Length: 102
Image (cartoon, rainbow, N blue to C red):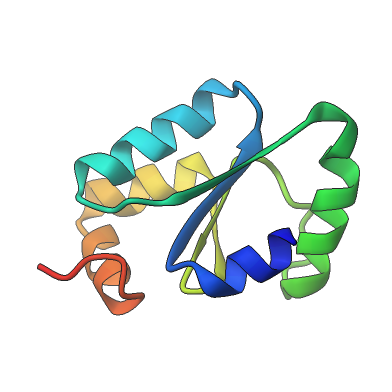
């Protein structure tokens, strides 16, 4: 189910239920005008969800939550979102994925 959501949504944040870092990512995206889909993972389901998502990405690194997918591709976590936002690169990426129209 989560893999299907990744491919259907322009932006999806996948994180642990109640995780403050997931909340920060979501608030940043909302502040930019993006309404991201959010998938909260229960602690008991983390390993299974991570395995499913790792199978769809070409990354050799283990998947860490929160994981942000933009345009169906793994973009990164909080650190990558913050770095690209600060550098001014995030908005064009979001526009290209169809998450922002202005």
